[in-house]
Image (cartoon, rainbow, N blue to C red; front, side):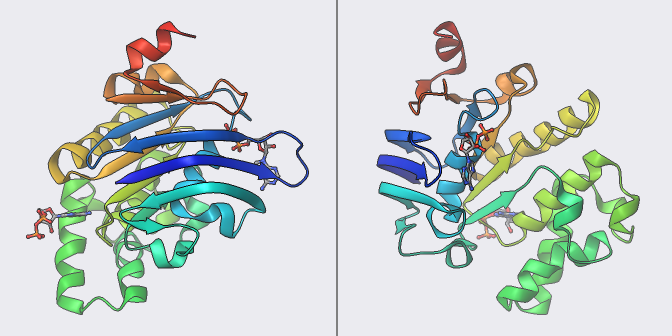
Length: 233
Ligand code: ADP
Ligand code: ADP
């Protein structure tokens, strides 16, 4: 589903590559945990999957990133939006509508999805994420965990094959973080969606992941089952 073929990413101000000659393959339905200290390159790796690198962040990409058969060099994020959905750390700032239901429908409206399909997918997604009772709530009145679930739902309604989550639990207390991660795990197992999730607080996510990509900070990636990767650190 995702192929990194000898990928390096360099930002013009920096002398060293943030990601250096990385090759890896992520299969459909895998849940991959991306870990490493702040500044190690987690966001950069995730932005290479949805095409923000190289199209929007000033980073230079060498090698190839191919997502669901599409080379990201030829497909900017807008043209990958049907395949990859990205959820950022602080969803409130990314919301574009007023209520939960409107936010879940917005992306589909932009894609021109028919109204009947839109209604069906909004209902499915509200149920899947356990937020049906919140449908008419103003977004700004939601708790952090509820906002994160709406942000994930807003991405899901486009039926992406891949979801990228950048530190989705950073603003949450442990209970809300558990709820969000449990919802994400359900998506992987029930719908076969491929998920990449970055997190610096390992203890929160390690039990959920099939695979860990650990960035030691020198541009390389240590790749394997979480227990094996942790043993090298
Ligand atoms: P992490 O997500 O692990 O904190 P990042 O990928 O955000 O790491 O950053 C990795 C390195 O690249 C850092 O040194 C950061 O300052 C630098 N960096 C990230 N984004 C940019 C950018 N758009 N322009 C220049 N440098 C950047
Ligand atoms: P179908 O093609 O009949 O929709 P799928 O196997 O694609 O069947 O999906 C099974 C169920 O999960 C359906 O109800 C589908 O609409 C729903 N579903 C599939 N992908 C997603 C997604 N990304 N977000 C939300 N619901 C989804």
